[in-house]
Image (cartoon, rainbow, N blue to C red):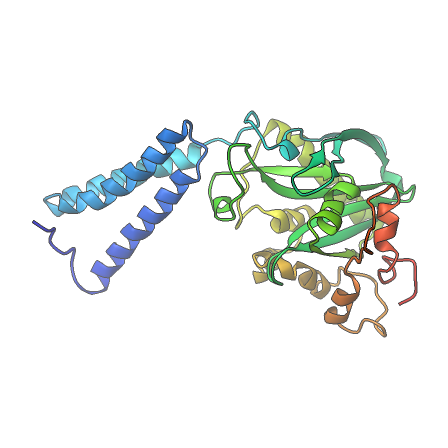
Length: 340
């Protein structure tokens, strides 16, 4: 016998929509979870929707609501108490986190990543330790990298020092070796948050020279005090996350929101639609008067500045010791040395 309808009108439809939404979100949360073994994870993905749908046959209706409510509550209770961890088997590029500490003006970074890429999948892992003089921090660059359309980009910062050092820091998903990358998974407890702390030859070079993405680099117009505060906020976060891991979340804690939080941006910018459509992050920074200063005669609007700020790599270029200088050679002042 088929179950009786839940009711008619907007209340009945609203109930059905809520049940369907809970079933879809709950099943996805289980599927993209880190539960082990995989057989248990996949089994729960079957059991949860089966209970939600099968309870439609329960009588009286109050019993149906109790079963569904208890099932959703149990799932929600597990989800909010599911802890992020640092002791998983990670994909190689995320296996060794950086650590940071400060002694006066000197900031020490252990495990700066500097992979040497022969192809997207063929690379030589490498890390080194470095020390950066905070008093020499003289630039912060915003990097946006596009691999498909114009709406989605990966966004990160690179800190430059007057002695020629650069440290690029990217807020990313920390992927386990057993999982392939999934955009949808980032909406659930699937990835831990990770600060890729790397040499520009690695973090930018893999995008310009290996993946052949469209990469843009802009100078941020920040005072020395703000530059230092921004850099130290990353230093503190990199150190803290080793002891207190966090979940990555595509909506609430991602590459763009992390930058805005570190920079102390006003709430209205953290809620801007361009935070989700990250390909427009540089446009938002332009509207916030954070880019430049650029010559308004040659770059009267963001469209002109954006076109001129793309990193152009000549055919056959190699990622060498002068990479950081080379990628800026053709960019507009104040980023590049040449005239517009």
